[in-house]
Length: 197
Image 1 (tube, rainbow, N blue to C red):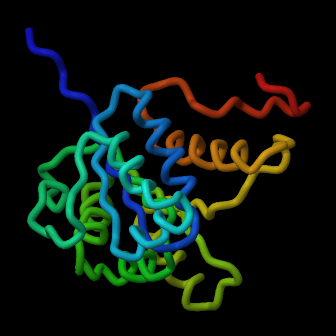
Image 2 (cartoon, rainbow, N blue to C red; image 1 turned 90 degrees about the vertical axis):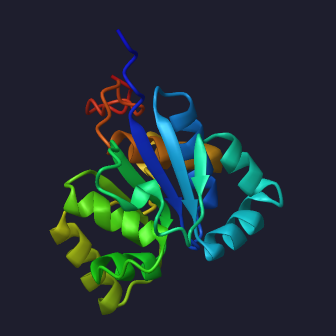
C-alpha cells in the first residue's frame, strides 16, 4: 500500500504590507502535514526584504516545499489538474484583488487564484489597504461573489494580545484555519467569557 500524498497548499505573497503574517503562515504550514508551494511577486520580494530583512525571502523559502517563479504561467499551479487543499494570498494587495476580480491571469499568482476559483477550492485573500475607495470595495465584492474568502489583515483585540507577534500569529493561524484542512483548528474557539475553550 502506498502512502497518500500530502495535501498541497499554495501560499502567495504580494507587495502589500504584511510580510510578517506571510512568514507566520509559512511557519504554521511547516508544522502541518501539508506540502506548501510558494509564489512571490516582484513587489512582494521588495516588501519582504523591507519588513523581514535581507534574509526574509530565504527564511520563507526554507519553510516551503517549492517556490515557483511568478512569471512561470506554465507551472503546475496554473492547472486545475494540480490538486490543492487551497490557497492563501498574504498579504493581498489591491492590485492583486483587482486582477483576480477581472480574471486577468497575467502572472502565476493571479492564474493560480483563478484556478482555485474555477475549481471551487478555498481561496483566502488577506487584503491589506486603508482607507479603501469604492474601486477596492467593488473588487473585493466581486471576488467574494466568485467564491473567495476576503479576510482583511485585522488584529483580534478581544484576545487581549500583549505583543505585535501575538497579533501576527493569530491572523496567520486564522488564515490557515479558513482553509478548513482536516486538522484541529489552530485558533481556540471563543466561548463567550474570553477564556480559551
